[in-house]
Length: 230
Image (cartoon, rainbow, N blue to C red; front, top):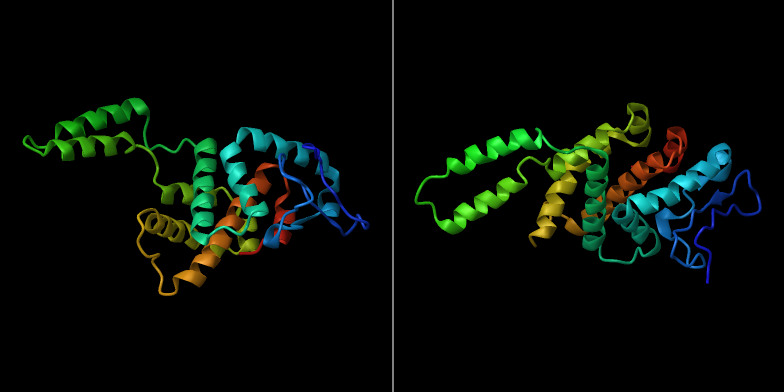
């Protein structure tokens, strides 16, 4: 068995060595791979290391679907790009649902709107179409994925956004929404060179998720700026 509360490791030179917070339930010997490995240097967070680690495990419990998507990309990066991007976008949407209300008006007010819209469906409308319209209205008060992503980006302080690449992250809501929709409905991604573009978009979506989670567990913005660049 391996420990599920391993706090971190630093290596021989603590002032420069990076640390890794292992995911509970994963074998530490496997270790993170690729761009996810060694992202934060210990000496930069030494004073707040303990609460950050505590927050990480608390996050794993409270945000399990988001956490699962995050560590899945860390420990198992060999999935198809389409699967990686869909999972990461789902995690971003889940993070927004947990942290933001995500509706335009109150449930009570929306119910009045819903009734009025349903009542306005013309008599004689095909029953299947009528039912489809009513089902679509069930979610009509919720923010779209595009709006959720924009709100997540708006939560990032301007100084941090500038440091990691504001111009690139501002494009992500539209690009991720259009690509997610294309993949979900099995049509071509909206670019001339989909393979390479999809790779870069997937990596950027992972970076966005990583940035938001690092902020959530208490890693300072200036430390994140040193670890992440879009």
